[in-house]
Image 1 (cartoon, rainbow, N blue to C red):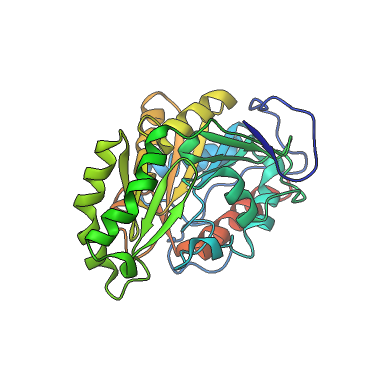
Image 2: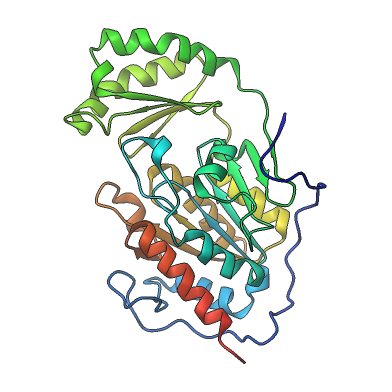
Length: 319
């Protein structure tokens, strides 16, 4: 199934990475600054050797690097109503600065691809003509080059869960402590609006796992959200497939939540296969697991945008 967002364009293949440098620029090594609390637009140094090697590889050969980012919590602040989330005001400009210098930019999200495009303000954004958004953990794909979303039909288990979920929530007395988001290929139950979000999350955890299992789905826990979705696809699979598609030799991935752990593992695997990688955590007090595995921790979406601008500053320095 194809849906169009923005102007109609002719399909184009995903460009392969090249070694061609951007004229008038030269790579520079990362600075000797820590990530959190660094001066604006300074390029922080990863805390791990693998991360430092990955950043050096990106700066040395940006035309062979893929920049991959989560949306919610990474490019956009987490808000009580997911429909009101918007990309950080500086995100599009930062991505547009980097786009002509890198092999590819890709956003990987659990949201439907078209929703992320709309909330991110990516449609027809100058400089982002080659942006790709992989939605539904990679099941959907939007290409800025075509303005088209490619998405398979939702599996029947999603519709079955959607029909049964109201009764489950009513039986738990959890209607007022939860908010249900229809993601097309998944159903997300949020507890952030509850008086005690963590207590509501724990109340729903076991019944929703059981509901998902009955209908052949899995549960992806997140920041006060339990997402019921089909198995077989995650951000790690989506990221690894995309890196292989582009032929990149370096990948920087930024995320903020438990669903990004699969992408972290994919970068670890790519490193073991000889590629360079940088793992960035958009830090929050709600998820400690990512920070412990990251090469670099920044202060939420504002910190991610500052990092992107710092990368662009370094890559734009005259030769």
